[in-house]
Amino acid sequence: MGDKKKKAQMFVKLVSAAGTGFFYVKRKPRQFTEKLEFRKYDPKVNRHVLFTEAKMKHSTTNDLKIKPAFVLRQAPSVIKKALGRVITR
Image (cartoon, rainbow, N blue to C red; front, side, top):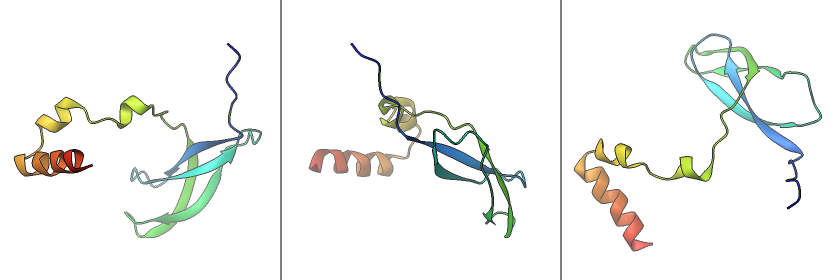
């Protein structure tokens, strides 16, 4: 079993400096060690603000699956719609 190759680029989260919680996701080369900073639009404050790089949670395929607790909290009509999509595929 060999070592896993690391991809040349990774995804980073750019978080608004206005503190609204709004963020963008961008690709960044692994060799680029400096933190990214962009001046981008934040729709929650309706202006351009500074966005700085923050760590992004790594998602796995297990995170993408529907969790039972999530399904139980949904309305019956939402559950029927979701089941209909799964059954018809």
